[in-house]
Image (tube, rainbow, N blue to C red; front, side):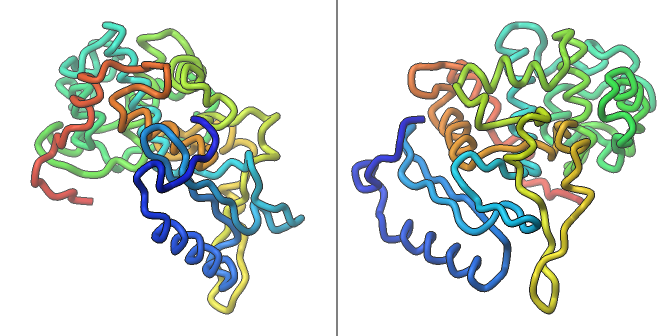
Length: 290
């Protein structure tokens, strides 16, 4: 995405953007969080990109251009997009049972679960999870996913899957492509958009110095490090449902690609019909039961 342009030229009112900046500056001054980055884009152009406060507290490190922020569940969209790429390339269909491509997945009541149900939180195993010792072992990940147990009939209920569905998506990507899911995401989704230095699912050791440390605010003021969120292991793992890292500018560009129907500047990653299909409301008025 190109360098920042005038907000008004992009059809945006600059006054709310100024209030947004003031609000974040106030939050930093009040000690609500150590640091932040915001990015606002329209029509594939950046209208606002600012960083505030600190990325790390001990030793102090300012939030600066290139700082990488933990994406939490924004990672799910990137992982899902890798599955979309397999669909776009004709290697699977959304209506396919996952077990058609991931042998063994049919165990424990998951035989009829479709790729679509997997990606729309209708899979039926929201409380399953991946043990940390399997994060870096592809075969162990596959075995863990096969062992997930359906808690209800897939497609019959909507229940947010914090981690299990996208670990399954990662195993599906590996089964179909023959490549590590992190490599596939980088090479087939991120790099074609020119975002390989901005968005990561699986952070290389060489980039760990750019990653923010996570903290929790203390009731009396100050912050407590969330040590379990700041380890090299969790950064490398690229947890597909919540462990990606990116700049705000990079994620703004990724979402602009979706808003523009699969295209960013002169790169078309997906057919517009595919993006329209994937971004439909697939669960209607059903309530998330989590």
